[in-house]
Length: 227
Ligand SMILES: C[S@@+](CC[C@H](N)C(=O)[O-])C[C@H]1O[C@@H](n2cnc3c(N)ncnc32)[C@H](O)[C@@H]1O
Image 1 (tube, protein in one colour):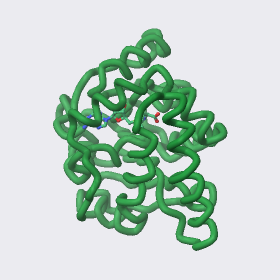
Image 2: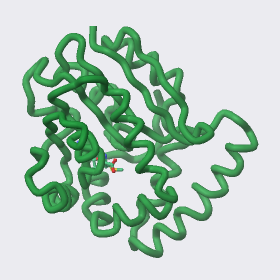
Image 3: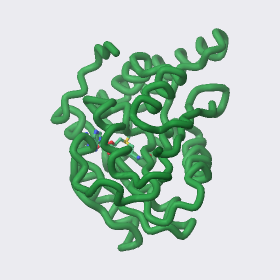
């Protein structure tokens, strides 16, 4: 799929390192805390996974939510400052590893769950990232992706664009002093549609891949089981 947004790994890593001190605060503020509910829903799709890899874990909000359910969790991210915050928040409850989603430093079949929240959209080669998540899952393991998506309904989409493209970048820039909140709507506009993404998961061995839209279709949970 053509993706006109610059997602070179260095740009993305530096962008997240730069906004890291304000990342959690802005997440909760700009989503009016809806992100918390979305992560809980994502955990619900994991089933009974006992050892879970959370890819692009950032400051570990999803990793910690999974941990609360009792699973052993490893979080991986390439941005050192995001990971430093994750370490402070998790106080040893999850294992944290610095690494690239396109070359996961784990053996084939070593997890029975793999998750990514608001991360895979930022990975320069999305398909490679998904292939890597599928690779580290054991057969029968669950993959769950939580990501923004463009609402299909024209009215909702217009409201979403007004907020996402006009208001959010200004508030985000004001608080974080970064263009990251301009990159966010641009990257969502260029992102895979829910059907397209489900079809791509099937191509990577998630035979029963499906999805569920969240909050009027502004986000989606994709899930599947490795065959
Ligand atoms: C929007 S944050 C999401 C963080 C967290 N999952 C959450 O739900 O808040 C995206 C994260 O993806 C990470 N990331 C992007 N591309 C990556 C890659 N190729 N390898 C590892 N981490 C990556 C960034 O460093 C950043 O921490």
